[in-house]
Length: 122
Image (cartoon, rainbow, N blue to C red; front, top):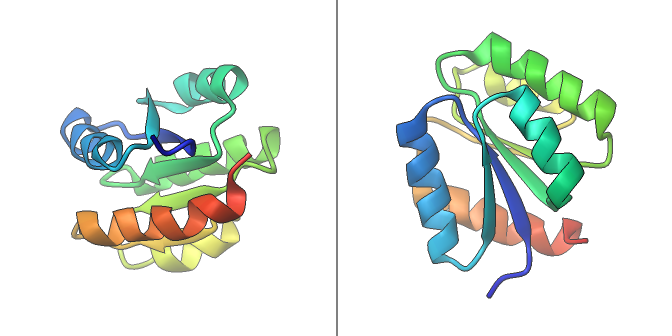
């Protein structure tokens, strides 16, 4: 089993299921959150090594959540998933360690997590 604990934050249950299932199949320990409040609880309780945050349709709302999470947990690495064309640029502004573009490419997502986890694993 992969010891890298991941937080998957996504307001869309369908996309969250696709992301979490793909990563769980690779042996990652997955914790889920649908909003910033749940994410803060998971971070405090589980201490994930990496947070994957799906920006999706609510791009501006999720970027505000990311800024808030980074203020409260500045050492938590965040990988942005999805969003519009500006999200890649904004990922650096909010302190994300990476970005996987839409349309969602599961193999690219798994590859990004495989590259990041050894660097950030607690």
